[in-house]
Image 1 (cartoon, rainbow, N blue to C red):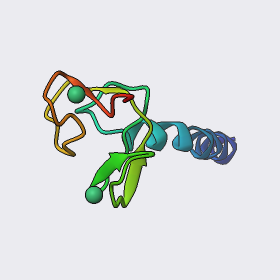
Image 2: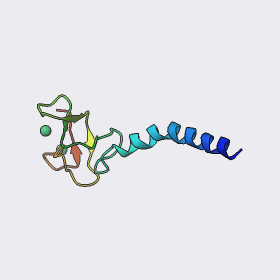
Image 3: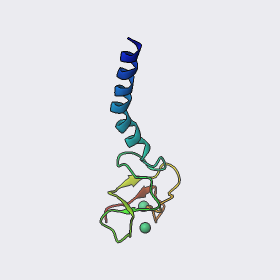
Image 4: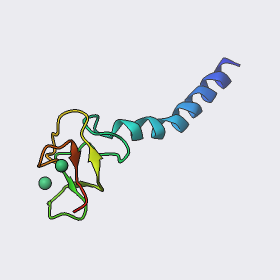
Length: 81
Ligand SMILES: [Ca+2]
Ligand SMILES: [Ca+2]
């Protein structure tokens, strides 16, 4: 009986894990959505940045603009031109 419970628990964890890790890979310095990934550097999709990660804007800066997506410092990064 206990083994059955343990197995059920493990299955639930395996099922829930993608949802947990998905929210954890968004950078907390930016409002979500859109999900700004945590990477060595993030550039605006469609811009001339070299990556390695990209985000499709606009994104609202709620913490520190660590990826310098908001060059004019108005609180919104990757603004449509
Ligand atoms: Ca870059
Ligand atoms: Ca801006």
